[in-house]
Image 1 (cartoon, rainbow, N blue to C red):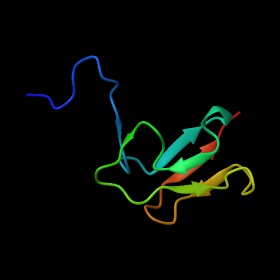
Image 2 (cartoon, helix red, strand yellow; image 1 turned 90 degrees about the horizontal axis):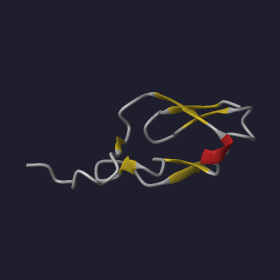
Image 3 (cartoon, rainbow, N blue to C red; image 1 turned 120 degrees about the horizontal axis):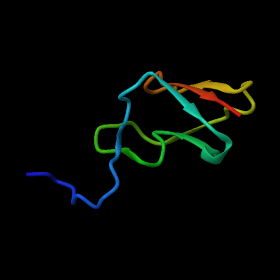
Length: 69
């Protein structure tokens, strides 16, 4: 038995990958990102990806975010 109705959007598992590509539409960037399942994740933090030259690493989980244009 599924815990989500079949019409519900599928959530990305938080901290499931180590590298995520994001676009400007995802800004301001937070980890975990909207659309990620949050039940087993860390507190939400905002990452200054633009100030860091287009790449940022989450201090909690080590996820590496790359801004692609």
